[in-house]
Image 1 (cartoon, rainbow, N blue to C red):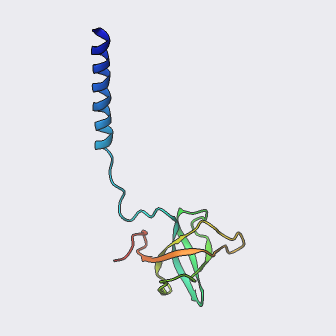
Image 2 (cartoon, helix red, strand yellow):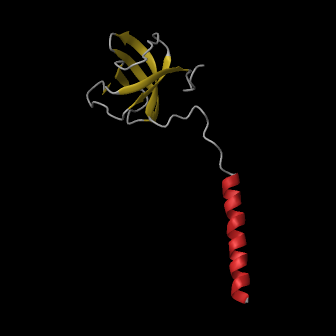
Image 3 (tube, rainbow, N blue to C red):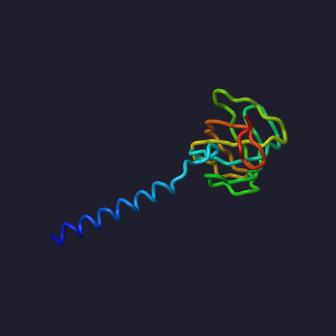
Length: 119
């Protein structure tokens, strides 16, 4: 009899704790990007690539302040202007030369200086 009451009490405590845990979960903000990415400022627009300076490393191996070349050879590319801020999503490959080259880009999205996509 005591074991069943103890079991019920432990089970109830676990249910209460798990409900608190789920209640504290918040959805990710919509500006969070799951792929390897970084935020950069466009310094130069060339045919087939952008020359940028990383301003937020995001989920990448690049450091803030690093200049880099970014490939623009993908479907749906719309060229940003010099001075624009962009989010660069890519496959995590970075050619380790100076300045580094990001060859396999999925998407380039214009954003504000804080990395929030422009609508």
